[in-house]
Image 1 (tube, rainbow, N blue to C red):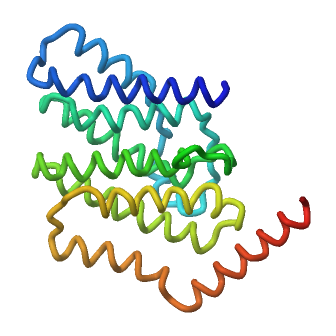
Image 2 (tube, helix red, strand yellow):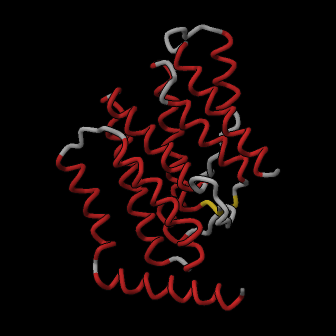
Image 3 (tube, rainbow, N blue to C red):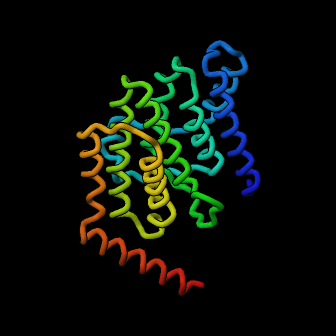
Length: 227
């Protein structure tokens, strides 16, 4: 599937998500329900057991094709526009999508027109979780806990992963997270922001900065030699 086809797919999914908002109150509209089923049926997440959850920091990644990643992005964009009756079903899916990001093997590509797919996926998912947490306080805890857990895992990957994976997988994912945090208005509770800051502050330690910089410099030199 070439880039043009992927771009068209993403545009279609984004348009579907936007159009659903206009019919948000028509919970029994057959066309709306068909559209929701069409998008949600394409979402793919890992089957995770209790043992996997306890060991997932070191779990191997699972490859996900670009077309499937875009379906997950489409669902995240759709979720915030769904009727309220669908929140109880859609939010757990968003939580699972975000949970999986550090363990997805994305296509290792640096030829991006705008944002890399990991960036787009995390931005769409975190944005949706924040918006749903604002509109539906009963689900706030689940949404914030998912974001905090993702932050912990992605920071760990930024510290420990191979340089090529940091460059093509985890740095774009972290950037999508950053874009969502700074662009989505959200009234953070003090304890929530403190917990988030605790994870992020790890990246500012001198040891982590020196270690990460040296590894990325080595990668750049290696790529230059190969050229």
